[in-house]
Length: 333
Ligand SMILES: Cc1cc2nc3c(=O)[nH]c(=O)nc-3n(C[C@H](O)[C@H](O)[C@H](O)COP(=O)(O)OP(=O)(O)OC[C@H]3O[C@@H](n4cnc5c(N)ncnc54)[C@H](O)[C@@H]3O)c2cc1C
Image (cartoon, rainbow, N blue to C red; front, side, top):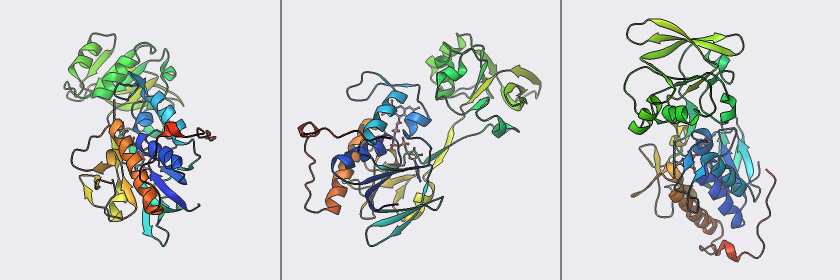
């Protein structure tokens, strides 16, 4: 891989905006993400939810926001290293060398870490054949509601995601059930009441014990978590919403100052290692808010500081994008 001015670790909203801003400032850019697609939490965790606190958007679907952030983030043609997890960091004469878990070497002058909560791994139910049915009946998120059109859908979980999806799929799914191992829910009371008043069949005190089907899921065995009685429950699709495991993992070994799984930064969003910045959910400073609106501002500032580190004669202030004589040409993705 080429030596670039800045390597952005994480293709979520803050990493994408950093990529855009670095391109605007004439820097060569690379985005690294362990997921196969860009968008971060917007794409992986809540693509079908509405976001209400984006400047200029009274209401926007997370997947639509991700689509536009991606279009903006790649318009200067950054190098994309997807399905690559940044693992090892070494200091070099030019800056740094990142080596990924696949062994790819990524030389770079500066680094912007926008790793959010780290690479995502959904928590599994932990039953036999779960991997076999992954994608053919077992889902760990909803990317496309049409997959559930007229299907018998069982949602597992008792938190906001489980209840939000139960409500969200009412207009497309056929028979729907919500399976939860206790009678206590973490979801908002309002959502709980709405689901209870809907046609969703509440399977409370149950957990999935077995999966059935030949190539495609046709049903599950439920076990009562207290009496241990079992029952057969027919369903085509199971949406598992029992959380995600994430960790900033190998980045913790890079010699960065870490505070409760977040990277400490100064007022320039620079870490204790020169030329390495952290922005978005992964960074820690007094008054930090884990929001997209604030994180993208951190990204713009970090890029401008990185620019002056590489070229001390460069101005910190980028100028107004509206003053650009020619709008940037969109690059092919
Ligand atoms: C259900 C839900 C609803 C939300 N609603 C809102 C809302 O309404 N408004 C709002 O402002 N915020 C909301 N948020 C929070 C918002 O999504 C986050 O603040 C935002 O996604 C943070 O962006 P980021 O770019 O910092 O990180 P992320 O979006 O977390 O992206 C980080 C990316 O880095 C990648 N990565 C991590 N480690 C590595 C590594 N070592 N190598 C390679 N890649 C790596 C990950 O795979 C991921 O794609 C919500 C969050 C959730 C879960």
